[in-house]
Image (tube, rainbow, N blue to C red; front, side, top):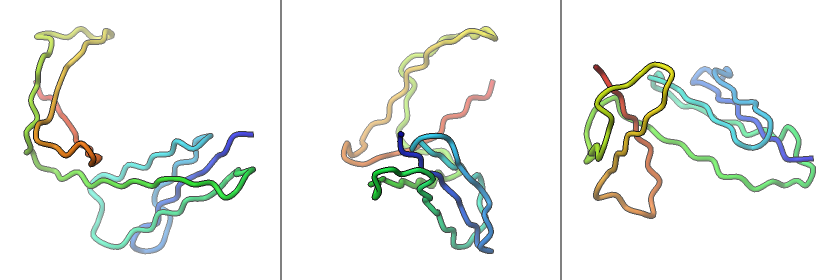
Length: 108
């Protein structure tokens, strides 16, 4: 069958504070405003028929501050509940060989 790995995040005290146990290999843990300390991510091979299974573990820290060179290229002027719309945004001056993660919020 298909491979299935899971994630377990241990906090500074050593206790598991978050998990991602979806079927398959696409797992995600989001931690908002974590306390200072050392965290440990455990990658568990729940079902790996052809072990070992190579994987890539990525981590980002998104600061709670605005900044950067984000620009909104186009956006609707109004929205209706229950419908979808498109907002085109872009960042300039980024290295194409680097992965980035950002957050966009809207107030209004």
